[in-house]
Image 1: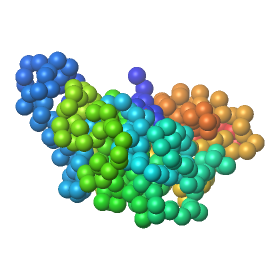
Image 2: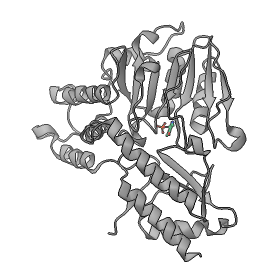
Image 3: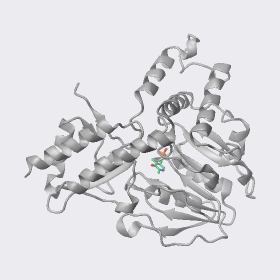
Image 4: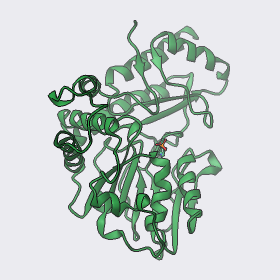
Length: 357
Ligand SMILES: *Cc1c(COP(=O)(O)O)cnc(C)c1O
């Protein structure tokens, strides 16, 4: 088989080391003679994986003692509901930067008063709104730091006068974050932190217990903090692979080291998009994501779209079709994607341009 380069948006490319360790554990989990799929989660061998995974999150992101990490099923989409159930008492505001942000807001509106403080839908979410002021009477302000579909990103921890809650599904572990600035950070693992089937939530403990509604046991973060994410059967396989993915991030030198590689990859591909006469980027330059790179055929060359897709495919590029709401192309260059993968895509774009000169 020819070399393939995987740019899938999620589930995404994972480090080979994590895949190899998972294959081994599927056959024989930690020398127990039992497959990872058949082990009891109430064993010390399994508890050691949970402990290691939690510690790695804390170490890699410098998570202060004020915060705890939990792992749950249900996807990031179910967290949209959890957030409102656990934190919304009177009023919350959302930064509407795309489909995921909008869905998070809609879920909160089913629970209480929530509104979009600013929105970039006027330009198909191609930029991050900046012209707004955060009122001081909110229970929380919710942001989506990386907009997976549109390739825009809030790349810095913002100052916020009220509790800040962030969906970091697609840029967690891609850059250092100051966790102390957030009341909560959450996301689905499958964009950068592991396989599908598990979410991570990093929660400021003293922010819980402040709402007056009844919270069903399973939807109450306190349940999962108290029981160390083992109130019920955890998604054993997904957590195992996530742990291996975190071990790989650590082996690469941690989040700061990986961030440097990510910046270089992003620069490489954006430079080519800006240089190449056949393509243009869709996201506002200052808001360009270092994880999801969106581009379309340049004006006048729209008819070449299918041909480029076919050409790229013939060269081993996988998963570069843009989301239907943006069109064109999207290269997701998460942590496990290498500089070599990015350069292969760039070579493909250059070759395609030569073919059409
Ligand atoms: C993919 C994604 C989601 C939804 O994740 P699920 O785990 O599929 O529910 C939410 N937010 C962002 C930013 C995403 O990229």
